[in-house]
Image 1 (cartoon, rainbow over the protein chains, first blue to last red):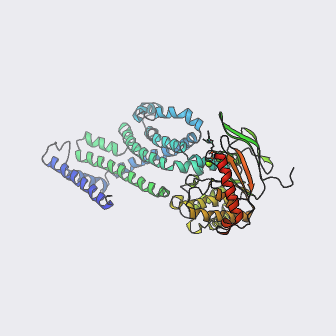
Image 2: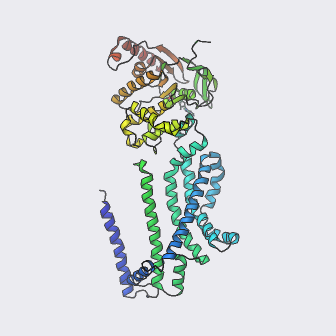
Length: 252
Length: 256
Ligand SMILES: Nc1ncnc2c1ncn2[C@@H]1O[C@H](COP(=O)(O)OP(=O)(O)O)[C@@H](O)[C@H]1O
Ligand SMILES: [Mg+2]
């Protein structure tokens, strides 16, 4: 039997409530010191101060902006380069091994290089976010292009389509499901790296806010920041899932 | 040489894949406007032959000529309808946009396309389905869509590779009649591959039978049945019955 959507939502909300309940119990019996783990009530008061009264808003926007900038730039670069590599089986043969080598390289490994090249600045953060989040979309684009139905390649030949027309009318649309899946992975990576970049450079953002809160033993602010980061990840992923559904309507 | 150039001419055409001889010494002439059906067992090289005429494959030896000119690569004057409509259509384009593809490729100005697309969709009975994706259409409707896309090229030669092989009998008969009507309107030359003897006789002006291993022309017979053809009267016509019997005997002899 297929569970209904409503039931899924009810279960999801129940899961969150149970977690909040446990959190409340753990802190009200002080199983963990409040210095390290404040109660949910204190955390939500801090969240309220941060969002409703606006104390955390500039930081939140700064992190979101950093994430989106890097992610969008990475997506454009990934789709453009991925299309060029993917459309040619020769290019694929040359570059695929290199890509497979670069991809699992932790983006943090590139940070020293980035610092050396562009210095400890917002440019370095952007560079690291782009470098780290470019791979999922790039490889997905190449994969999508490499797996065009051979019949459609024949159709393009029969219609004497130019290579450019093939890319835009067949290759790219064919790769869209892969690209969207890659972009969702990339977005998560972009958020992580945006925060890491803030921690390193001290630029305004939720990462820095969380770091300061922790140094000053403001545990409630620390957790408020972490929750906000989680919410950013959740909302952006959900937004992309909705976009997927619309764009891939033809999959039925 | 001849007054009217042949629409399709194959001269001593042979094709091998590696050491595997698929077709040998194929000689064939198709006049403009002629409807020729090619039958043969599975693996006899029918698809390979069609792909050479389409310019998708180059013969190992011999020549393929269209209107007197050697075929070197595909041309938009030649349209192909594949059996596997599910793969040949663009699944992310609606019916309307699928028909638009050849118009875009042929450089028709965007302002002229809508009228032409709607005319073609109406012609194949898909006037009310222009907003559907191929995945939302039945097999018969998808094949109609592929036919509309082929006609959008305004081809003078139409190559069809077992186009109705995957359809049920009722749909197949309807589509046979539609294809006959559509190509007679424009005097299109048709090269129609099938493994169904009755289909070949019902549609064709001529039927060519291929022998297998390697593929070669075994028989080439004229079908002097009156047009327009009719699913009942043509199939009951004494000449149809006689030819059907003859073809069965030929095919049995080939495969014996
Ligand atoms: N690209 C190819 N490479 C090697 N052999 C092929 C290729 N295409 C077809 N063949 C072989 O050529 C023969 C004829 O195939 P085909 O033209 O598809 O026959 P038909 O359409 O009459 O069933 C078959 O034995 C098939 O295995
Ligand atoms: Mg075949």
